[in-house]
Image 1 (cartoon, rainbow, N blue to C red):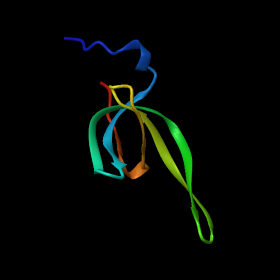
Image 2 (image 1 turned 120 degrees about the vertical axis):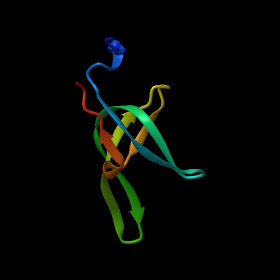
Image 3 (image 1 turned 45 degrees about the vertical axis):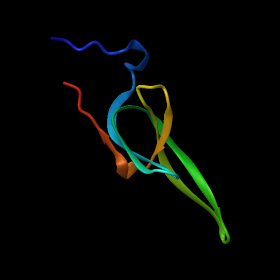
Length: 77
């Protein structure tokens, strides 16, 4: 049986992982669509701290920021 993939997300890599929500802590997701790597930053007393992030779309349409170490790409057969 072939699984049908939504044509809107066919060009994105499937992934699983977890992202951080300030009020709730880490939230796990079993399926997401990786869009691209990006850069985020935080202002500190001594300057800015830049770091790499992953931009992931969840099946609900919500877009979340995921730290690279919290992304697992799902191999497609």
